[in-house]
Length: 244
Image 1: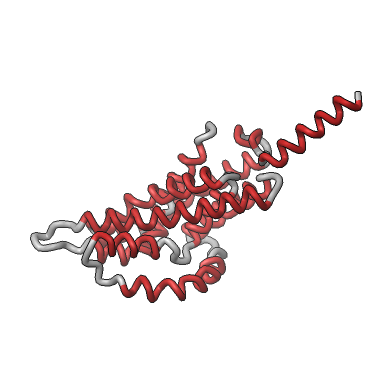
Image 2 (image 1 turned 90 degrees about the vertical axis):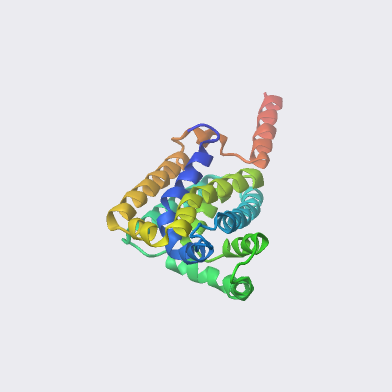
């Protein structure tokens, strides 16, 4: 993939991981999408809810990307971790290995403080309420979000990481909107073992692609240096030049 291929990967992870999202956030989307008089789907609160979630994801990504760029001289360990996390997520969705549950339990400490705030926004009666609820719900402990966040962390800059998380969030939007419009039918389809296995297989491929690139086989491996490392390389080259 090209230099912007990480966005396509993040988008796909969000889309294929949305079978997990429906289990975590589907209840809220269903409540927001309940028919208004005339049996029309309430699209405005659904869209506002998704926009709120995406804003939180982008903020998380920016923080993670800045941390990743500052903490390590090379992105290779982060990319290896990202690939392993995506593979773990694939196994989680497929129901083969549920090791990511411990990560969700870790995030539950923060959610304990945010949940009361989200409950005060229910029932949602306005677009701003839906936006605020989505922004809070973006912090719900979720193995899929944490996997995507690790992928964003490995991008090496706040901007690229924020864009990666934004793309990931956009990938989850179709399932969330569909759940709000036709909750029972969509949930039933997405929870079918064959569908979950198909989606898990797709995420497994992206995890493998990330590992492949981290090990130096992908096109992005050549850009695996932060500015600090590039500066060190430049100084080393100058030193060699003066030495000769």
